[in-house]
Image (cartoon, rainbow, N blue to C red; front, side, top):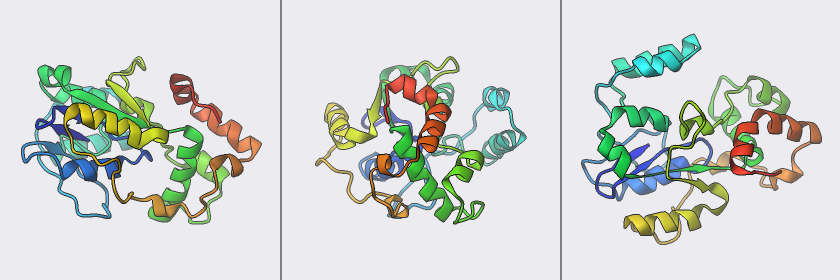
Length: 232
């Protein structure tokens, strides 16, 4: 997540959508007073800043339903992590002055769920020890914390509250339009991509899925599919 006072934008980071690459690129152009959240184990030089501070955790605690999420929220509050990497847009809205939220350009990125889930599967089983490296795709769908993104950029009634949801499939084109409007330097590419090397099988996702797997993802991600008109 980034709040840039220099360029007057708010970037909401979603999962498996080049979010870390975007943050690293933008952090090099942001000002010293801008808010740049941390990234979990960045693979390139990165300078997070100004993300700590006090805030009211009660609205977020009320929304949480699992003990693990409540503990995580309390941990962030105690350690003053006011703005974390994957913070929701509605939480950002609660923690900044209304005039900043209303007047800054807010954007995020979304990705076709079938492609996103496959990328996430390869990522977590190699990156995180809690997942067996040999876990099957079916097992992953049953036990993993899946990369749902729509809650990152919607309110509690599932209304989109950012100005633009960039499509991962046309990432550089869409970012080019936004950065031109904001005045952010951009030569058409973010540079080296973070975390893409975890997916060794580079076949199009349509060639990988079985009919059963395709249907499972369709049911699990029906909100995002309906919201953005995604198709297999």
